[in-house]
Length: 196
Image (tube, rainbow, N blue to C red):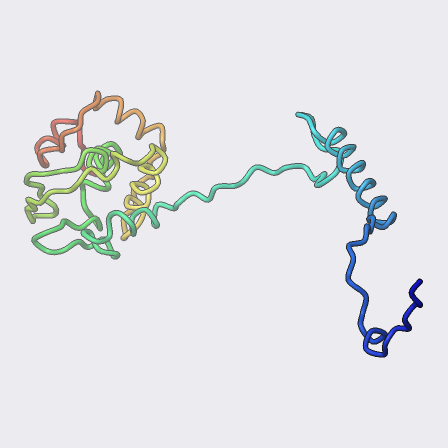
């Protein structure tokens, strides 16, 4: 038999060989994970479905109010670049809206002009304009056309009655799907324009 050797000082100082130990998850982690899984599953069953939620905001829903663009805002966006912000137009190029018999006369006339556009000679207070106005109202709803025409008829010193959406709808129906622009003042008179 060999006698056991005493460990040498260098051997005593060395660390043991690392070993992989089996370290199970702490019981607390397992319990917390299990409880979260259980409550999550229970919540998804009780709160899912097509019915209203049992929790959350219980206020009565209020429909969103869509702010309508005013006639003035529509005018500034679509008309003021030609007719100017003061409605006086550009001499020799774009007719004035202020004091124009085409604006303050029959309600239907400015509705027709805004809806179809206008090209051809138009006498406004002794000055003949022969420009072209696009059909800006073709893409507007009836109430939008009514608001902008009413703004023009009541603004710039004009004192004419406002126009409602029903009048715009009636004019559009009478146009019977027409898309081409009006051909000037003579056609407006033929269509029934009456000066104030």
